[in-house]
Length: 470
Image (tube, rainbow, N blue to C red; front, side):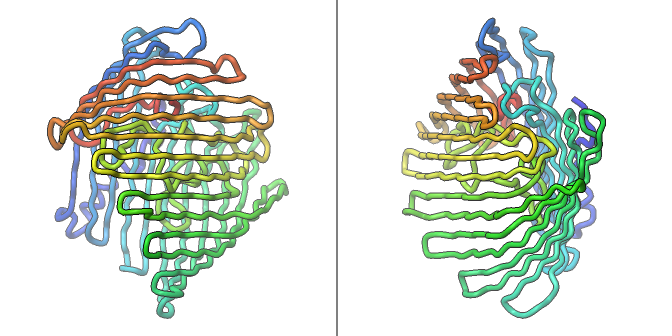
């Protein structure tokens, strides 16, 4: 693993503390350490000649945050080591960093935001998620949010930003420069209207696989926005058009937009929905970065808050998320990224329920990687005692590669027990069976795994190689 730019914000939190006059008042530091053991009967996720292995996982982590004063920040970092005791793979080390700092240089008028995320992402979105299919990725972003004084009930925001994307193996490293102007008008006490204009330039910094330079790209977008709050629901929507042009003269344009909706069906249940379509680049669609609004998000991020790793439903036991890894293959293409994400959540006195459905279509401008992904997930969490919680989960994922006709189906069923020894110490025992059926026979596999972990403090022991494919 090459730790090029392993985290340009690793020390931002400490710098922020030094610069903020009242930083020590609300400073929170949480260390974490964990141990885990996983037995798998198919360590290499192969259809034949399967080998079992016992994988020892060790983990150290920390979270530091400051949420008061003009300078606020949060940084989470971890270092995980995996030891394959039967040598299915060489020992693996994974570094993770997610940090963001916000400085209100002039309160309510001028903000600086800086973020950095370093993680491992798949090289091939359709390949088995083993150590051989992961690469280091880093995204650094810096943005300013300028808010001139105008009329009452009107807000104007001007956001220049810079971001830099790095991928360990793929020839897609790039720098991005953008400028956005956002106007918002409070039409009523509970309804806002808005208009956004933005321009973004992608400068690819490496040559392609055949030694040729990659054509730079620029995006222009204009959109109108609506948001509001009702007695039992909230929503925000944006409708617009994006124009894309490469330096070689290639052009495309089309409709873009999204609708986020949250409805409180009762005091115990919620319905969440995201419908979106966008013309963008694959790095922005697949990796977290600062957006034109100056905050951090992922393009196409689900309003249903699907998790690529272990998650907690309703404060109960940790259960496996419903998404099957990064759906977007990192390339130099312009893509049409369309998502429908629906989730139903219910929290009863003794049972938490989550049902999620997801449809995702990705259309590439050049590479024959167009595909449709469908996800269905069902999760239950049941508190056995005050300290012991059980959960079960079922997931079905289907993908179809439109240009080649390749089809993949992944089924997962599992259950776990979580025991809280104290406020800071907890343990997890997880049983899981998963199976993949593909028209590309080398990708077929089935696997049974048993996982147990013990964690003190911040975070959870997770296996990065299993983070996305269930």
